[in-house]
Length: 387
Image (cartoon, rainbow, N blue to C red; front, side):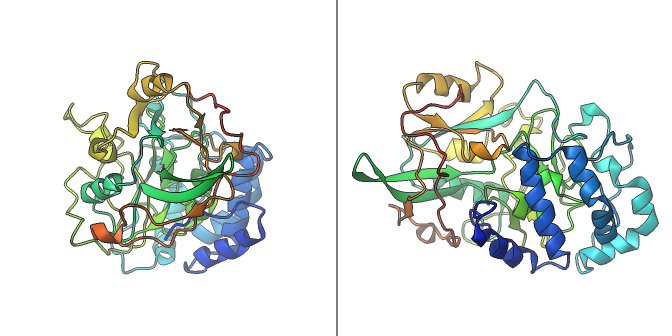
């Protein structure tokens, strides 16, 4: 399960990262160090060029390839090699089997194609469109219908909740109050998870800013999980929920030709995709929608282009301009593209049982530990620059 991780630099971070990485066949120490430095990029403490050079030899030695998006001036390549489909092979052996051919093409076709194919080449593209959300926690009733709808739509494993609703008690102005916070992948503009991916299976689309995983090229090293400050990544285990889940009915192949839709295969990393199969659909009624937004009975989730002043999320942010607005862990520097409306949870927020449990909806609950906002979070009433 992907808990909200400890903050980088906390003593618990080392143990947390080791627990995650020791379950893979790849280098745990490399995963820890490269993930720490990926977060330093987001914080502005390390340049992408320095980061890429620092780990180039180690990544190449461990994986046989190094296609991280921090690679300077990657040469375009229209080929798209794929990891063979026999999931019984270890991912390390697959890379070795690809050998010199994989190194020669560098899996570059998966990341360095022409600019109009939607893939990312430099880790920080400029785009006129940035898909994101405004989530109104002041309206949330913790009914969990967003989680249930996502599971039905994407056929995710039992216990996996791409949107997870945290229920917690927090003290404000001397009063203890129960609040809720729905946590998706933040689809960051500076996604540290992409910086550590050796095959560039984890990537950010230039056309709309959605962060995705190419299921055909992911090797399951879990480096993205450790490099993400939000705890939104899950390794596919092929354990569908027979009651809630259903077969994925969307197109798994996105408009850029990469396999990104629905639940990940066993041994492959997955997370919220913003229902990319809908965004890439030929059906105009599906485009611009997500299952979680449509299922919410109280209009908590607003999905759309954060760069468009007339989009649903931007309009809602203006309607609620009198309420506090913030981004999760915005001080980290990943530039998340979800804006929350309501009281920011404090570092002392404590998890509690909500009005509806995941078990009651036949969805196994995850082993989550709620981590509140950091000490440097603005006080209640301070508004961010969301709108």
